[in-house]
Structure formats: C-alpha cells, structure tokens
Image (cartoon, rainbow, N blue to C red):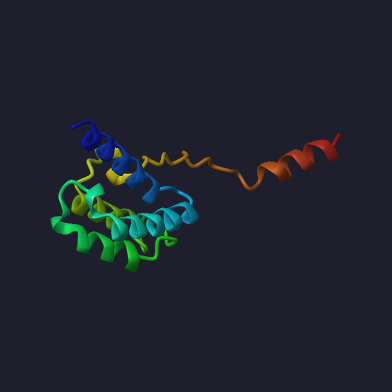
Length: 120
C-alpha cells in the first residue's frame, strides 16, 4: 500500500516534469521514463495501457512547444491517463498567463516635450 502511494506521487511528479517549461527537462524525463518502463513495468500499478504510454514517450518530440502548435501538454496528459497518474486541473492546462493591459502611447508626446524644452 505504501509503495503504491509512493509510486503514485513519483508518477505525478514525473508528469509535471513532462510538462516543464524547459524543453530539455521534458526530453530527458521522457527518455528516462521510457527506459525505466521498458526495464520494469511493475512501477505502474495498471499495466494495461503501458505499451501506448511507452509509444507516446518514444515518439513525441518533447522539445516542441507546450501549447499549440506542438501541443506537448496534451500528449503529456494522454501519457498520464495511460499510466494512471492523477493530475490536477492546473497541471493539465498549465499556468494561467496574465496579459498585460495595453498602454496607450501618444506618439506626439516626445515631440511636445522637445518643443517645450527648445522653446524656453
């Protein structure tokens, strides 16, 4: 029971690494997971979808973009589903990116200040 809990936590942690913002971390994590799953399939509680998960781990280019067009995050979510890893909604969708409010820049503002300083 304790080993299943530990495997679940480690698997969730590895899934977060597959969704990491740095491509090299994603790629290295996928490579190491692939090798470990080939060596020992007992690390996954339900091995029914193990082949599909290893196929995805080996075929996806993990150094592509997380969102579109690479959609690495969606493929990572599929791997998590195949391996039975529990990801939160935030982990599945990624962090919310706040957009900065557009500041209106007056193109004549610098000219007006130039006229004021020269006109003195």
